[in-house]
Amino acid sequence: MVKLDEIDISIIRQLWDGRAAYSDVSNELSISTKTIGKRVKEMTDSHAAEITCLVDPFKLHDHGAAFVGFKTVPENRKEALAKVDKLKGVILAAIVTGRFDIMAIVIFNDSFTYENFIANEVVKVPGIRDVEAFIAFGGRDFQLRYLLD
Amino acid sequence: MKTGETKDAHIHLSLTDLKIIKALRNGRKPLADVADEVGLTLSTLRRRVQRMQEDNAIQIICLVDPFLIKGHSSAFIGFKFEPDKIHQGAKQIENLKGIVLSALVSGSYDAMAIAMFNEEFTFQQFIMDEVLKLEGLVGIETSLAIEGGENYQLRYVL
Image 1 (tube, rainbow over the protein chains, first blue to last red):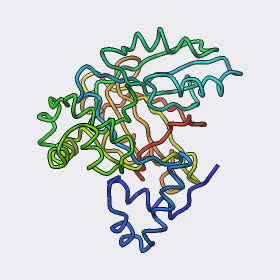
Image 2: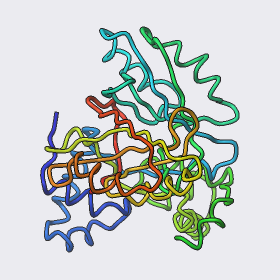
Image 3: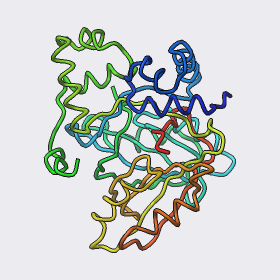
Image 4: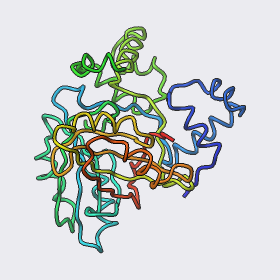
């Protein structure tokens, strides 16, 4: 697993505008464009970083999103995370401390509803004891990757 | 940003906009290629992308997996407010240092967020210097992320 260094972080910061020209990033950081291109490629190839377009689901017709907390049987947490991560609608997921074992953010729409997510997707994950959804009503900084078909 | 908020809340993206968003899964794809894929002229596409960005409907950005950066961590945070302070509280959360994303939610919390910390801005500082600023806060619950899935990549906000 790669670890990112200070230079990688400085590049990521400059790419707050993901389409910034590498020549501008290069001037800003005094690093060659070649190095920037190489670093970005390494980071994105290894899934350490991704340059992508996020969207506010509340600006799309008939879309919604939720934070979803899962409780799992203890010995199943890692396996459950790997499965949850691949469920349709899941934008991101992580094993967490506290009253849930896994937290995820899920997006849905009129052809893939929250009910579909529970009935057709969550059942694929063995060892889930409980699911609690916090349906989102939107926020100014609530932008997500769009992962539905 | 402040004045546009109420107006922006009602902007809905079209199916063409959604096609553009999907085509920009790779955020650095040349716009000429995106234009071909969605069947728009380059200038129309450019205008649409720019408009969506200005409306805060989309953001093209480099996300990062915080587990791969030394000294960094992240957490899901649930907030509970006094009933008449919920909306105001949720707005304030957006402006706290360390917040990656946040939203008003239904359920046992009133708002939820993902926050990011590092050695210079620790979880303790987040609580003491940021969260305790929130007016009408009744309680918070933190779920510290200890292992991320493949898609656990966040905006780098520190």
